[in-house]
Length: 120
Image 1 (cartoon, rainbow, N blue to C red):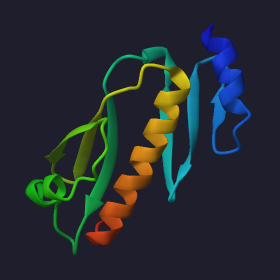
Image 2 (image 1 turned 120 degrees about the vertical axis):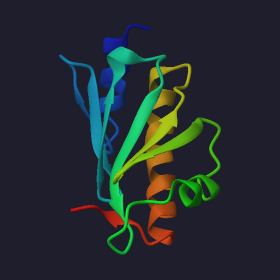
Image 3 (image 1 turned 180 degrees about the vertical axis):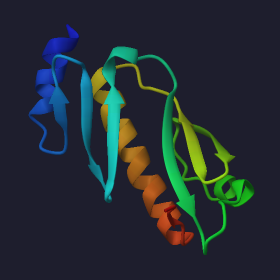
């Protein structure tokens, strides 16, 4: 199936907005904006947050120990307030979009439970 047809089908889902000319899919998950570039399907995705906890930079070991269980979440990196989760894509476009939104939902819930917040 051509990617244009798949993007049209994804656009029918009220959780997502599709920019058909660029292949970008975006939406809101627990107050966070997720942007997926479907023209890079098959590559690793970065899920990036800028976080702090009680004014301190995130603790990588705490984040790694409490990383939600999801088959496509691979690792977490911390550079100052920038927290990057590495995620594999699924085989199909629709599955990739659904999986990324699911991972962001799991991550935001875990970060909330750990008392992390957006870094200013």
